[in-house]
Length: 84
Image 1 (tube, one colour):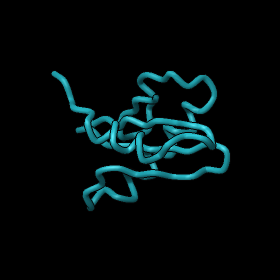
Image 2: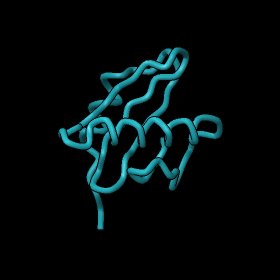
Image 3: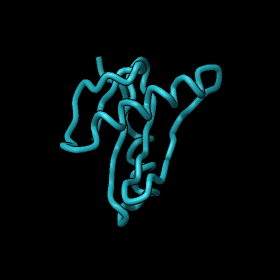
Image 4: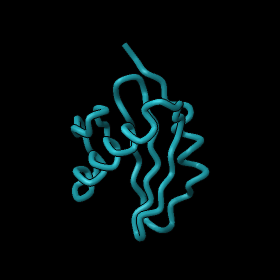
């Protein structure tokens, strides 16, 4: 799991190897969808699957391998709420 700001800065990461790359993906995605509402994005990057969800000024992304259950991750991300 990776927590990023919308400019791609990684604020917290549990992924040792892909955190910086996810920050770049988040920043590019936010720019691409800035005038549209984006609730959840799922991307297949070869051996790594990424699901991300914007939450206010932050974005939560989950990385997984080829065996990840994308449907389960999307369901879990839909339940994430912003806390004060």
